[in-house]
Every structure is written in C-alpha cells, then in structure tokens.
Length: 278
Image (cartoon, rainbow, N blue to C red; front, side):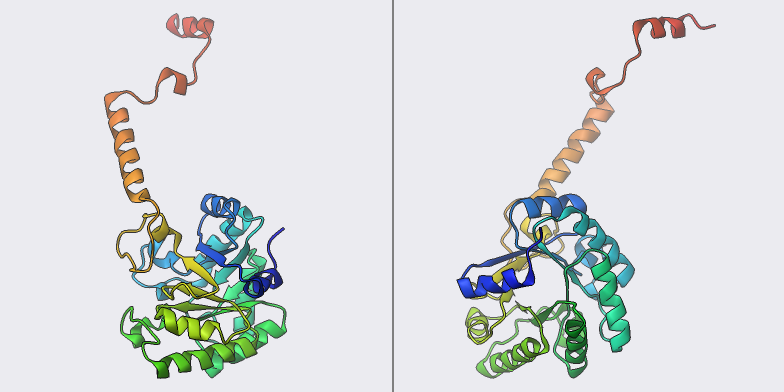
C-alpha cells in the first residue's frame, strides 16, 4: 500500500528525512520503489532527460500523462506525485481541476505546482478543497526560467529569504502538504524549514530541508548535457550503456551473437526434411 500524505507529514514531526527521486518509466519506478524511496516524482524534467527538449516548459499534458501511467503501474509503496506542466495550472479553476484530475486518474496520488502568485494560490486552494493533494515549489522555479534569466540561486540575502518564507507560508495556508525548495543557500532553507509545519524537500537547498529530491538521471550519471553542482552522481550509466552497446555491435558484426544457446533449434528429423526438400 502506498504511503499516505499524513505519513509523509509525520516524518517531519519524527525528524525522519524524506527521500524523493524522479522516475519516468515502469522499470525504473519499480526499482526505486523497491529500494524504499518515500516519494516518486514524475517530474517535468522528463522534458529534457527523456524527450530531449530544451526546457521543462516544452512538455505538455499528453506526454506527462503517458509517463505518469507508466510509473504508477510500477509503484506499490511510494507516494506518486505528478508535475503539472507549464500552462496546465496557469489557467482557470475549472481547467486546472480537469488537468489535475487527469493525473489522479492516471495513478498519481498528488500533483506539484510551481510558484506562489495569487492565481496559483487560488487554484491550489480549489484543488485541495476538492480532495487533490498539492505539493508546492519555490526558490528557483524552472517554468519561470525566461523571467529569472537562467539557473540562478534564490534567497541569496536575508530579505529575499524572508520573502520566500512568506510565499511558503501562503502555500501552507492554501493547503499544500509539502514544498520543494530549489537552488538556495542552506541557511536560507533552514530558516524556512524551521518555520513551517509542512515538510520541505530540497533540491540544491542544502542539508537542513526535511527531505531531498534529485533527478534520477543525474543520480545515475545518465544525462550529460548539464550536471548540477548539487547533484551527487552515484554511478555512470552513460558509460555502462555506451560500453554495452559497443560490445553488442561488435558481437553481431563478428558473428558472436546470437549463439546456438540463444537460438531456437529444429529437431534433427525436421532438419533432415528440409535438407531433402526438392
């Protein structure tokens, strides 16, 4: 049975760190779930790491739903969260509700929304009041990359940190069950984390957040267009995939694959019939 929102929130009270990783396909989600990850995020980062788009703003509802369904079929224990893509919640309440419901019907337990404008706050309240859990996202918000002007650290001074705290408190009041804090000094995220009832999930936010999230392709060393400073690489699947593919090409070209053991073989009498065919 999947973890509940309440269980995740209780982790903060208990002082237990929360683990979150992204997944976009059935097999990866299955293994992350079996490894004990608390929450699996079907992140709009798939725009870049799975679909090759330039920015997360390029991915749409139809694509996000395909990946959400695949992940949800694999997960038994973790809470599944779906990123609402760009312009799927910056619309009126009715359309935001329809879009969020599509993710719940696809198997997600909650959705994630970026930002803290009055418009977004109203939509969060509307979803929560109608039974759809929402995770917030503050600090660096990838959907705002055009207005922010790049991957820039947020909350770099006391005034901006206090502003982000106020935004986080608004999200908390609107009903968000947790909030992602992205790209900010660890002292800033600590200041915010200590003043919220809901858990904070850091990504480039330092050790004092209640939990941590990473893009799995960064963790696994699979995506090489960009390596964030904050992403610890635990393996190099890029090299593994490259070397395995090279070995396959070599074996096929040299006739070493497939072997007899990897082939289906006729009975001797059937071979004889073929040999005697005129």
